[in-house]
Image (cartoon, rainbow, N blue to C red; front, side, top):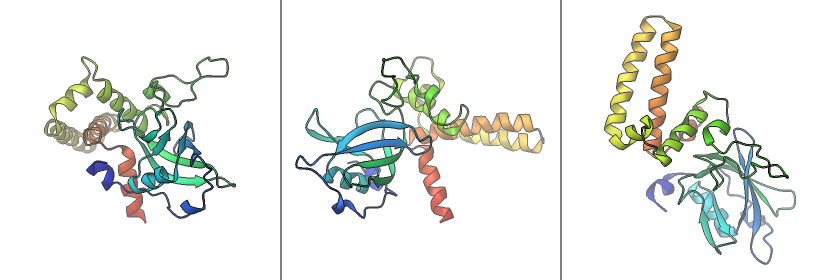
Amino acid sequence: MGDAASARSSSAASGGLDELAFPEDGLIPVVVQDRTSGEVLMVASTTREMVARTLDSGDAWFWSRSRGEAWHKGATSGNFLRVREIRRNCEDNSLLYLVDRTGPACHTGAVSCYFRSLDASPVIDAHPWTSAPGRPGSLEWLFGIIEDRRRQAPEGSYVAGLLAKGVDRIAKKIGEEASEVIIAAKNRSREELAYEMADLWFHTLVLLADAGMSPADVEAELARRHE
């Protein structure tokens, strides 16, 4: 694992790992749930070693039945699952991961793997910014758009272009937007302040994306300070 992954610490408690009832094949199911929206994102299999890796890194690790190997979710796609809490069921033979995600959980690009009804009709839009947890306009919703632009880098995208210019340019934009926020505040205009603050928040989220972070990392720091 890279330095960034090693530096992250999971808030999930490690006690109870030895009490899990792993069957002969060593695999138990894991239900992955978005801790903000409550939406079920996916179901996978895990082993004792993969649970230990999850606890150690803070990222979700599973066991791929199809490939027969360890699976670090997001290592290829960049769509990591940050595990904030692990729960076990009443029979100690399955787990629930409460996560913050950095992108869609499904390999199809849908937020959740459960985007179809039984008759295969769609129930969730496959685009992360329209079906992202949280209401449209929230920071999480906006970050989903930014992450999609970062991954896809569509031609003409302001986000993709800004990220390509690097951290110095992004930081300069934040400085410019912060100055505009100060002016708006001094003008005592609610409309102007909301407008300029939106620009500032947007560019700070771009900076987080550039650093390989998400709003959840900032939330964790705020929670730590409260403690």
